[in-house]
Structure formats: C-alpha cells, structure tokens
Amino acid sequence: MSLQEKLLRLFSLDQKVRGIQGRLDSATNRLKVQQTKLSQLHQQRDELLSQLKLGQAKASSLEKEVEDIEQRIEHMRQQMQSVKSNKEYSAVLLEANTLKANKDSLETEALEQLNHVESLAQDLNQILERVAQQEKLVTGAQSEVQQCRDEVGKQLEELTAQRSEAEQDVPEEVRLTFNRTAYMHDGATMAPVIEASRRHLEYNCGGCYMTIPVERVNATMVASETQVVCCPNCSRILYIDQELKTSIGCK
Image (cartoon, rainbow, N blue to C red; front, side):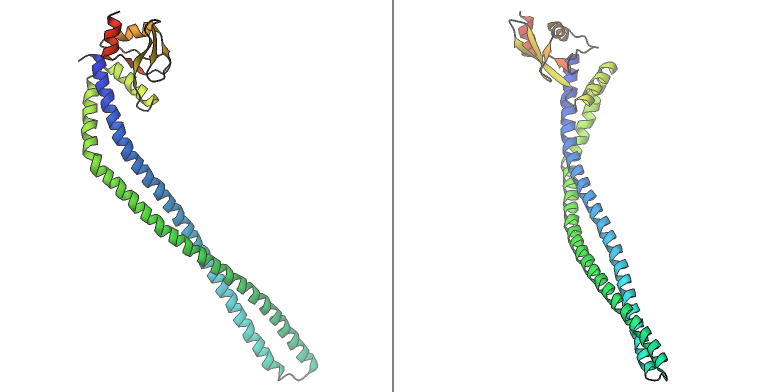
C-alpha cells in the first residue's frame, strides 16, 4: 500500500470517527444547553424564594407592630376614662393620636408589602412552571444522549481503534503533518488535485480551489513514501486520484 493509499485510508476513517463523534457531541452539547438553562432557572427560583421569605417576614413584622399599636391605643382609651385633669387628658389624647398616625403609616406600608409578597409569589409560580418544563427538556436531552451512545458507541469504539491502527502505518513526520492539518481544517485534512485546464496545465486544490503550481502537482505524482505535498494556499495534503494520475502520466 502506497503512502497516499495509507493516508486516504486514515483520512476516510478519521472522517467517519469525526462524523459519529460529532453526532454524539451535538447531542451532548444540546444537553449542556438545556442543563444551563435549568441551572439559571434554579438560580432565579432560589432568589425569588429568598425574596419571598424576606418579604413575608417583613409583612408579618409590620402586622405585629400594627397589632401592638392597636393594643396601646386601646389601653389609652381606657386610660382616658380615668384621668382626673384636662392636662392629663390632653397628654394621653396627643399620644393616642400620634400612635394612630403611626398605625396608619404602618398599615399602608404593610399593605404595600403584602402586595409585593403577592407579586413575588406569582413570579415564583411562573418560575416553578418554567422549571418543570425545563426539567422535561433536560430529561429528553439526556435520553437523546443515551440513545445516541447506545446506537453509535460500539461503532465509534471500533472505528477509533481502526483509525489508531491506520495512523500507526503512517510515518511519524507525515502523521504529525496530517494531525496538524486536521486540527487546522476541522478534519478536512486532504484535498484532491483538480484539473482546471489540461491544455494550459492549470490545476486547483479541491479544498480551497486555489491554483496549484504545476511543479507541486508533479511533486504529488512522484511523492516518496516518507513525504507529502501540501497545497501552498491552505496547507491541505494533496492527492491525485487514479483517473487524473493516469491522464497526466499519458501526456
């Protein structure tokens, strides 16, 4: 098997591995997105719960203050019935009126706080509904990932092993070039030489479609078993299919 044939075999296996892995990665990424959304909803839920508890505690405290003032006012009303002088009566009345004004203010604040608590409770209910819906989406995404693993797990394992075996058949220097180019082009490592014009000896790279110097095409034709020829524009490893190789060789 020639170096080109070994590289093409490695390229084919690499593409298959990437395709299957990409499918699994896509399902996993969708799961992560749904989990992130759920986490954000949980955070909103927890914040609303905290605000609701604080609001309820404040409302309860205001209501307790109002009750205390009402008791003090009632006590003063009884006290006013037993006062013995106008001066004492006026002092008690003034204090009672002051307490009543404070009570009115606290009642207004308590009502506002209760309305705020009610609004928080409504927001919390909406968040809880969204959490429930999002949990269903997360469960569905988890099932999708598991189903994908069940369907392609064994195939991916076998192809990965075959790819590793094919990689070992390639010289180390060429292997480094292959892997570096695969990283650069997200797996689009190799590209065929395309004949643009036989008459004018014009050839293009099948990856970037830029012109390839005829000298590089000739080098690809006679490439050794330890070296590869790359496109001068995109750095993909060039290869020539048998039909074009035969055509060029017959000229």
